[in-house]
Picture 1: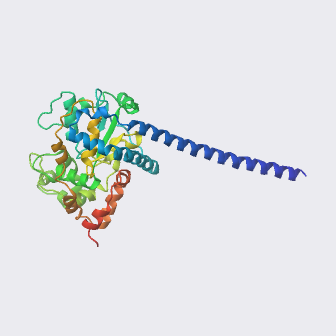
Picture 2: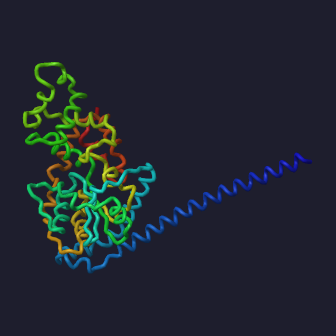
Picture 3: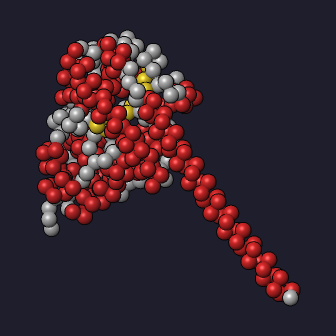
Length: 353
């Protein structure tokens, strides 16, 4: 009798336990859905565009913005939710770096700059808004003056729904090739990247340069003014890069999430510089500035164009399919998050063997 009573008691406890598990699971799912609905509602409210914002644009640009506003509103929620899902999928985290952001209090805009992605044009824009002159092409020396004053201010700005937050992306392969060409291959002048990294590259790909001889390895590699004598190939650069920790990546070839902490904050707009509707997207971003902007659009539109698909393909053709796949795996997070494809390069640039 006692055994039967104990069995009934245990059975009842198990049923209660299973019920509680399902209840907790239901609450978590319902909370997550409600939270996503809240985010979507806030984003839709954010993109209920006020036509008064367009007063600073000329008539042609107003037509472009108005015609594309509905498309922008329809697409932006999907883009931002895609970013959120990819962040959740990979459980990515990265720290916020104050000097990776430019902020203008008057215009209530926050921008995360990324090397080789129209960053100079937008640094110039933010500098002009504060009447700061850029001398001798020293754009990045002005970042300290344009960034939020402290990490606390940056956090406050990120939490402020009244601030328009945006970043600009570019196909990861094109940005990588552009960075290699600018900082490694171009030996007309000294670069910090060539001085710091080329000896490390050659230690892997050309160890014979470091054998004992009357000439030091640095003298073999560099001129007396620290310009490169011997330029590594793109393949050598990638072979070295794939052996390095992502946490130690230089800002010229780090991942977008690492640089802009995309998974730690919510951006209001992502502009893809290689998008077919770039001009509409660009005008939409300008419409969120209150000041009358006089940015040189031709400079922005032409910046980085020297490294296009065809030129990028030439450099990627140096890679074997195995190394190419490893390179994709390293930047897979950026590819998925911003909906870029690797297939066109794989099909047209990489050797089939």
